[in-house]
Image (cartoon, rainbow, N blue to C red):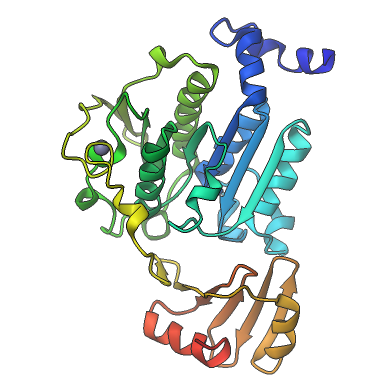
Length: 340
Ligand SMILES: [Zn+2]
């Protein structure tokens, strides 16, 4: 315990945290959804700050193009195509062994969000799409869990904290019609790493205030940055809208949606198909050996198909069809090799 005391001494000397705040951090349970650029910075800060329990969720695996900004990963992780949640867990455990890290290689859906949020005191947004953000927002406002939004693309970013029962929610601030769908994603127009660190760091500041119980000082505004030409903009959060389907009418539309089994991964030349059954990778390695060149690690199986596309199978039943943006083509290949 003396080691722990020494370890966090600089943070405990910071009066708004203090020893009391440090104890609260050690008892906290934080969920980070998405372990890409924002998620890796968020997790790094949370673990170094001494958060006791961290749950991380990501559906993807480490690729070379991630290394420019996804700060927990290295060339080994990319070479072995490790799932991000697993690679991040390994790295985070080396940073602070006192944090219990619960890693999930999975999509976040209306079907599993309840379980993922079980026992959680704070949710940090590391996602790259509004569909998942609205889902997190609705689940947080239903359960009364604080949620800190962050997003970054190109040299621009935004962040806002939301406190159920106090502030408005993400839907009040950015209605669904104003969400993405304009093709302005990191995969289309790129992103530079400093904007990631800025956005995630501001998310972490609000997260720490929430975790140590300094709720009065939580910033009640949307901050946005453009860092190449340098502009910054701050907008006070509007009052909760009584007609908001989430925080007002409490209908939580994202939790009601059935969730499509086919998802486009924008700009990635990839279609994701969520199968109904788990996939036994050992078995599928044998089944697919004539379909093309097969390679595997304990977390995923890849098949370079003779047709040219590539299949990536995950134990939770998901299959990525890489090399096409056409959902029909993806479904055809899925039907051909996995079966509907
Ligand atoms: Zn709302």
